[in-house]
Length: 456
Image 1 (cartoon, helix red, strand yellow):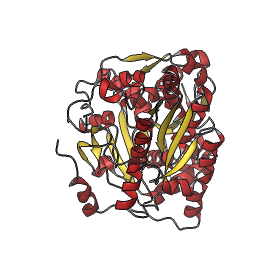
Image 2 (image 1 turned 180 degrees about the horizontal axis):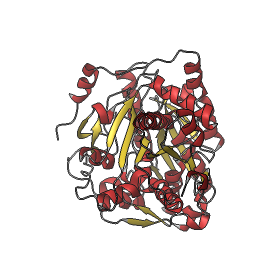
Image 3 (image 1 turned 90 degrees about the horizontal axis):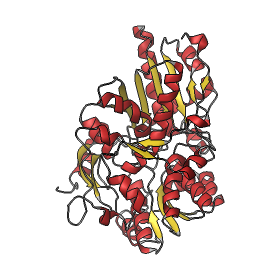
Image 4 (image 1 turned 180 degrees about the vertical axis):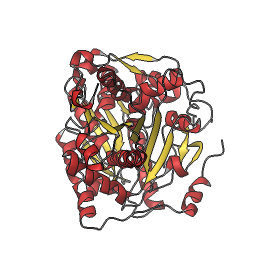
């Protein structure tokens, strides 16, 4: 198939919507280490997790042998509002770069939440409703997850309480208002409404917050309110499972085109987008059926993979959640308030951490100003304003395409465009006004975090 025969956008029809999520752990010879109970340091059981999470989600979290989980009809029906999502050939970007590489992106921003987060939000809201719960609590950083969960909760008639990282709460008021429009309550974190929030405010006066702080508050709220459970938008195995729909659709679309990606690139904060995008391709690699390069792109200001330690750590700043073995820069790490590009979590998904530790995946870190340069370039060539998180992947895809131009290699590059940046205009304004800087933690700052890792 030559270039002229490849359509600009490749859509699957609703009859090609995946009927099951794929669990990559089933094909991993060495599985991710189990979550540990923070008090006993023993592997978490369903009994440990069910006071916090929905029972069906706990089963998904702990199952490392079942390869396929059927997607309930109610979730598939909701998905049909915005899925399958398009696989797009970035012809204009290719032309502007003068590269022989073929660049594709899987676009996840074609829903009101503006991101891939709705894929898991609707699943988690469905299971909460099926369990007969009254509501859910959660955290959100840049706001995409909170927006997605507020939408899904409204659809299933659930109360939704969101703890939003304080600096994002202040920088992104319109994202906050979308959540409130869908009926969610939104509290800046760390707040004074929870015990752990009060503790964090005492220990870190004037804190701009972190996802670790917000998680602690959301878990405390869920466990103290009858009929509520906590739901999370990234990191966990269950979230990687739901997000596999991204990669499954991309895999099917490439088969339709008769094309195989050589390099698959995704932004990496907690890992949900990257884990979902690479899942079926990684499965092929694990089974020895096909080979790919996988590249995780993270911010230099929050470098868990590229500068972190592979160790057990707390998933939250308040140390009330289980311990996960992951690449981490320490549960106390709070990114600079000047960091506008999202991806603010201190650790990485245990699944992706294990794959990275086995050498099955690469990782790079990029500076914030370089990310926004790539976002601007993409917007001017492809006509779509990308989310700052997605723009980490755009940066790496552009760099890869430039290498192809220099070497003459015609590689096929796939990256995940996780969402749109229309609620991120304060960050774009800072970049356009030349007020944006690059914060990179020092070795001493990271060492202080490593010193507090639990002795497991």
